[in-house]
Image (tube, rainbow, N blue to C red):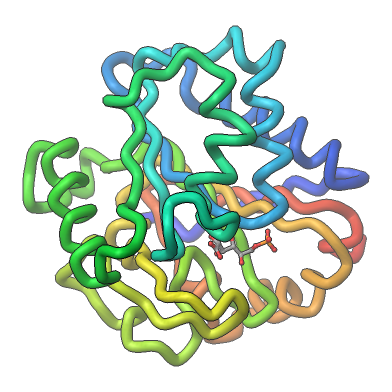
Length: 241
Ligand code: 6PG
């Protein structure tokens, strides 16, 4: 298990997205078999997704082998603009040669968040081929995450019961921040089953919470572990450098 942090600071949000796209392609290169990527919502990764849909990144990715998952989702109707799925479809998946079988969405309402979480856990276990996570065989090749102004990541919010859950891969979650809609989120053990994690954060409003995380504060984003290093793609404004 790794908690090693690698900081990668770019001049601005566009340069950050370029760096993250290069990293994304390099992480998936030279691997055989199916590849699993977990996506985050939020404004920062959208720029990354738009890059993956165009060259040079697009032609460097083997879309036939990549399976797309979500680290968290808002349980609202499928056409609600707050859906992370809709954002990724619009920015990336609608523009690349991906088959429906490789897109693993978290269900939209009217399903209950509890049922959506249970169904997604079944889906992940089916893809992984086991009900038990083996530290030697991570579930995800890449886990993309963001950080909220309160230190949340995925939909793991400070002080909420979901933080302590170790025996589930996916749970329903109450939001601690806007948008106040029911959520479904991967748990810490599921996130930890990743070969590589990348946090993306841009803008001066992220600086105060990043300072806290890097100073060792007890916040959800600070508790993420993975099989490999944890990359932090930041822009100058967020890092304060
Ligand atoms: C969500 C996200 C969430 C996000 C952070 C940062 O669905 O709410 O997955 O965890 O990554 O809130 O979002 P921004 O990049 O928009 O600040």
